[in-house]
Length: 321
Length: 277
Image 1 (cartoon, chains in turn orange, yellow):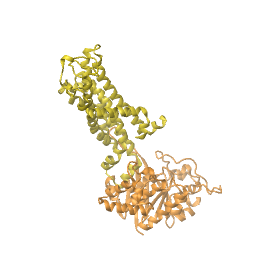
Image 2 (cartoon, rainbow over the protein chains, first blue to last red):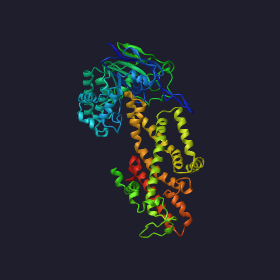
Image 3 (spheres, helix red, strand yellow):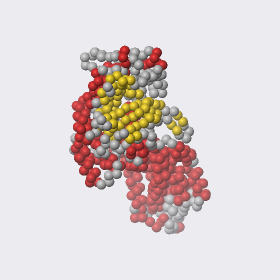
Image 4 (spheres, chains in turn brown, orange):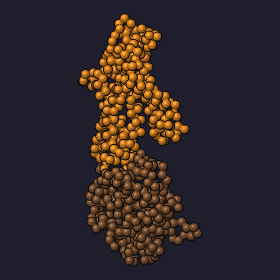
């Protein structure tokens, strides 16, 4: 299968300031991430808040400039350029925000916001734009009359559909979905996920699905990567990852999901994730890991294959399993 | 707008401003003696208020009511043009400085701070000495000292809005900074700019009147309010009406703009909105 987007040893440093009077070093929000997303699949990225999921997405999109490593889009290297150019180069990649309501300008009617994306891409013909907007609104299950509304007049589910329509208009190939189901109740969540699947089939999309809701990831993703403090610690096909998690962190995450019968399936995580400003030595998970020993403290583990398409970044995955 | 009308104090300010604007627009037809802006009638000088001259006459025998009415146009023209000029300088500077944290932003804001530190009256007096004293000089000086307030307001708003998700989403779609700033940040900053402009109007009228009083603003025989108060100084306290009515006009118009500005600010700021209830 052809690769849609890929990254090798991607490093992103955030918050480095170079003002006239200020100078400050940044933190590494993404620290050596390699991944490869096949065309047509749904690739899930999971991890706790602050693990670098959103930064990874913004970097792949081109909004955030990488400090090191390489990004490939359809087998062409697209990294190493300034953000303004990067966005134009990567028009095939689009991003749906976590809170699509706040992603709409409150002063603009929804229709005007939708038309603006087309105008930015150089479509100036008004009737053609109006036709495409009506068509896309119908594709996401909304009446074209919604174009006349203001963002605050829409419900959460409707805002999400508008957020999708906004980028579908631009005919993307890869859509990055940042927490697409956060803050929705279960019935709306199911409807949005169904819509996402329909749209993927209809427009031939590839999804990069960022979430911390494991039950949703399990349902929709083909591949899943688990991130911890800016690193991918485990990656596998979704079915295998949920059936046989290898990394202690993955297991703890799966165990942390609440269960109705009250039984814990795995030991839960201790403490909070450390700050990005003070990343632990060796394996960055060792302070919270049940299997940690001296080697974890001293040596940084590397990605090792476990099975076909399944790799894990841990010294002790064999004993821990 | 509806919320503004529910606030009686802001409503009063709004009415005062609208009334002044109407008077200014129709001044030549409203004034009982429109020629009294320039004609003098020495035989009827310093007459107290009567049916013929409701506000009395000044030291050249001119009807004070007519001159107050004719002066309204002057005051409002000065206020509007000074505020517009200040906005033309301050708003773009605030937008540019607020958009990115770089050396340009630092330079612009330090320049703003320097201008903010110069007292308005002193700069106006200095300019008046350098150039010919007159209304244009006064207006130039006021614009030069008022724009930093706009630059600061817009700077703060731009900084707030550039972190907003919808700005991020636009950047994600590939929108240029110019498009984002002019079509999205500026409209969202408009309430704050409007509030600042309204309060600035009142402030400008007051300062322009002070300049007129000090002799750096409007020159005789212009029917300027501040100038009228200055001329009346020598005839106090006997001819109290000469100073009182132009002064009252200044007071009411400034009060109107300030009350309206306060009301607008309350409407625009949701945090204050809650505390008012």
